[in-house]
Amino acid sequence: MRLSHCHNCHDFRTLARRRLPGPIFNYIDGAADDEVTLRRNSESFERCDLVPNVLRGVESVDMSVTVMGQTLAMPVYCSPTALQRLFHHQGEHAVAAAASRFGTMFGVSSLGTVSLEAVRKAHAGPQVYQFYFHRDRGLNRAMMQRAKEAGVEVMMLTVDSITGGNRERDLRTGFSIPFKLTPAGMLQFAIKPMWAVNYFTHERFRLPQLEEHVDMGRGAMSIGRYFTEMLDPAMDWDDVAEMVRHWSGQFCLKGVMSVEDARRAVAIGCTGIVLSNHGGRQLDGSRAAFDQLAEIVDAVGDRIDVMIDGGIQRGTHVLKALSLGAKAVGVGRYYLYPLAAAGQAGVERALGQMRAEIERGMKLMGCTSVAQLSRENLRFR
Image (cartoon, rainbow, N blue to C red; front, side, top):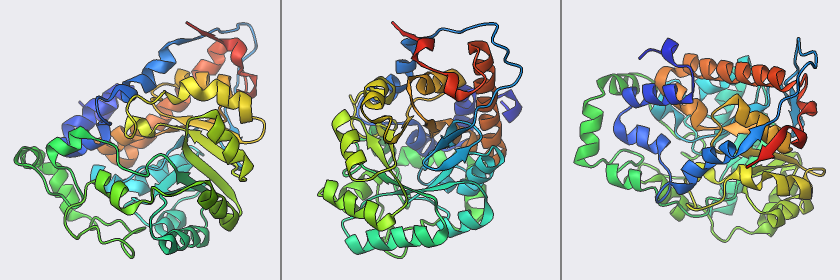
């Protein structure tokens, strides 16, 4: 299979699986426990039907949105994800370049493999910094200050990862940073030599947001162990309120799932929330974000920008979320599979397909702008 043969998310996943060593593919692909929530995230969209209108004059459509003060040419953004240069040597640079080309937002993770400064300097477009709250409060303040000095527009605090999810695929392969693999995991690397060639002949793998503060090379550390040992389970609403005041700009909470928490985010001055269950990678059995969207929009949608992520695989999924009141939709695996498959070219192909699907879907729905999408266009089974 070649990149030109990839026409949807499932095709990109197949190509990524062929090109990545098994432990790395399973890190992207896997989720917590029985992976019930992972499956539920996409299935939630299938219980909702679109009701199109016709004869509306849809020669041209405007799919732009404004979210957290940022104008996006399309209502989909690239959510911050960790360890991108493990998947392809271009890493965050590939994703940022593709997002910039399509006029949308991209994010850099605390566990990113390219520095905030390098990405900001090289690529235009609104940039998010996805931040984890560490036990070391001095580290938290230093990381926020660094993001501000780098010119990051939006601070995004992940709030659903105060301890690591039980990602059993990673336990079976021994996936960790740096690698400490099981014999079966080592065999998977041996049979994918081109990945190893690219990994070892390009810039050394680093975690530049953390390397001055956390010794990830002191023995192998799984991502779950990083969450459990380095992040602060004592974080509470007072801590976040202090961060919001300190940042004094666009501040978003990622991982909100209840109406009560959405209201508290408004009360402490957040400008956005992302309804998310971390792609099913944390609390298995959690409700899908799409299933929570309507009640949270009804509660706070007039006071804060509500976004969702999780399970987005099609432009029609995006249209359903926007019709329920989401301001924009984040994607993760949707761009990680094509990143792994072909670097920047893969991400650009995936975003181009998503843009085409949204445009086609809006025309078939009889909508010339995102503002015309509403719950009148939906029916739930």
